[in-house]
Image (cartoon, rainbow, N blue to C red; front, side, top):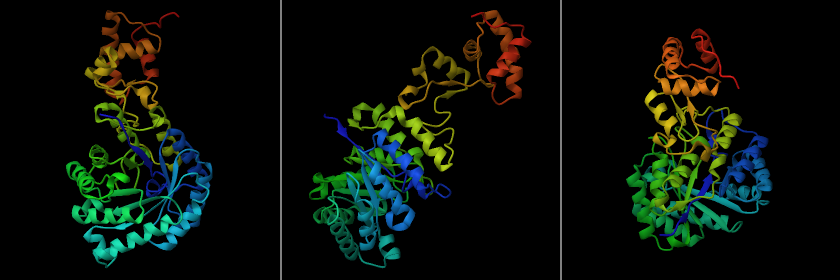
Length: 389
């Protein structure tokens, strides 16, 4: 089976920036956009140009500096939105307009007070108008996760006929289970005329903690673009995490799915986004969290010291982390203490280690973590001298 490329569509600068308190200025957006381009993302959703003069400027400036990725601007199915987006993207080497409308019965009834046929008509008009400005037009069927598959297939077929090049199938509320979302993509692949001529895209939210799982399920069933953000940031509980989907595909080669992402830049990019947005990455965040490669349990520490693969499925260097961290706590064993002591200059015999370990436990019971300065004090208390270099 041949390997299939999955495009990475990064919406950190659009959907990610919608997090309360995470507003970026144009200069910050430019810094992050350049990094995303360097990272190897295929599409950068730079903003929602009609939403504010600042966002228009940011999309326009990003269009000028991005060298490799497609630059995308979001719109509603509104002519003025599309016209403004086209203007903002006019200097992009590879411009894309991302337009669409809600397709679930809830959205049709309560947001638009319309009928299904009227929603399809508005979608067709939006795609055709966007197509008059750019060749690459992505259509989003908002709340596709809660849209029945038969109607969603009708929508998709109409948008393909109107000229859409990408079909975005968002689980806008993070409602779907992976099996349901995967089956939805499979249904579209099997029931939409012309579907093989366009790219199906996954845009999943994390309200139930399933955004990454749903996106991978979508890719397994034929989607070839995943929309995601650095650190999984985004509205409410966030979006699909870029670093997670990239490393899942990398660690499971039998899926025959790959990306062009340089994974060794993931940690660096994560820290950059965190710093500029002022949004701390949770320590237990997969791939890029501070504890992702940290071990404090004595059993785990002993295994990792002997062979990293006993408790780590990813080499830290693969995501740009220098090395695994052996964190000394009251749960740590002799192997971890000897390892950390050696790092700071002490070669302990077995007898010395037994004595030093008892002193270590006194420190560890008083502190959450025993740091290097504590190790030196423990050695002094135990009358152990550092090895001579």
